[in-house]
Amino acid sequence: MAFNPRQPFGLPSLPPPVSLDSPTLLRAIAAARIELAELKGYSAAVPNLLLLLSPTLLRESVASSEIENIHTTVESVLQQALFPDVERREADKEVLRYGEAVRWGTEQLPRLPLTARLLVGVQRRLLGPRATGYRTTPNQLVNSLTGEPIYTPPIATAVAPLLSNWEHYINTPAPEADPLLRCVIGHYQFEAIHPFGDGNGRTGRILMVLQLVQDELLSLPILFISGYINRHRTAYYELLLGVSARGEWEPFVLFMLRGFEQQARETKQTLLRVMEQLSAFRLRLRELPRRVPGQLADHLFAFPVTTPLQAARELGLTYKTASRHLSELAGAGLLENKPVSRYQFYVNRPLLELLSQQS
Image 1 (cartoon, rainbow, N blue to C red):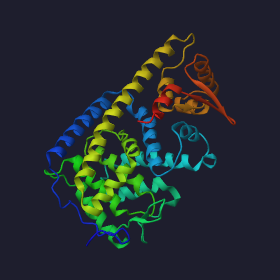
Image 2 (image 1 turned 180 degrees about the vertical axis):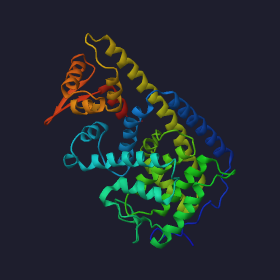
Image 3 (image 1 turned 120 degrees about the horizontal axis):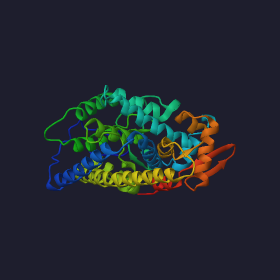
Image 4 (image 1 turned 90 degrees about the horizontal axis):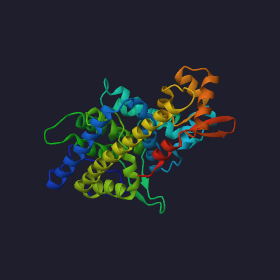
């Protein structure tokens, strides 16, 4: 049956009914695998990588949310994270929930593979009280300018069997399908199923990075893949639709493989620059006339925007001591003091600028 954007799509089960072993694709897989291996190897050698995961994950969270027209900035989210929940802007809440969903999913992987249970848990943490589980009513994607239908996902009763097939495919290694290839194919299939009423795009991007961790291509979810999709948003959606409407698998797979390659390289370069900044910051600490605890440097790179209360809590200091240290660092030009309302923020400006760069 011909593709009709107004009618529920009869999504075929996986694996795709096409051959994906052209020389062009094989070269793209090899190039992406090399960059991912270098990123994984480098990240394993980075001290305190878990500390650095927080700001790099935030960068991904902001970019992924922007794809869904949820607009904020890294600095705003870091500030809002220190406010009580009732005082936070809704856009910043969305981004903070994205980070929580990624962290929760990563923690589950050792005992829970990428299953329907895990993806429901990710979506629940992503949407908070708005999460309602699998959709039970029809859904349709429309052009925001014209209102014309672009794609109608499969009927609601097809969601569960299609997800069962998706789950089996992505968790079953096959000699003819490289893990990266299965990751890309699984990503298309999830987005085509569109199992939820809301949050499918962000959930799908989280699942894609979690799959790279599950398949041991990454050790932690540090790939900044949403930056690539954001830069090429129109092409991404057109290529997704090309698979559904015309069975054009290779252009979409090639697009995503190039994204993995580029973003693995870019993420590695970002980590290198962060570590350079951290080393320089520690050196400046040692040059100060009054001793400041070295663990404060780690804190200020895990939390580029902090307050005396947060620093005291994280480092086991008294409020007075933490406030004095932060004030001394601001006086030495290492931090920016930024009062907002009744809060006294201290900002690691060079790191924040690095994380806020569009790439």
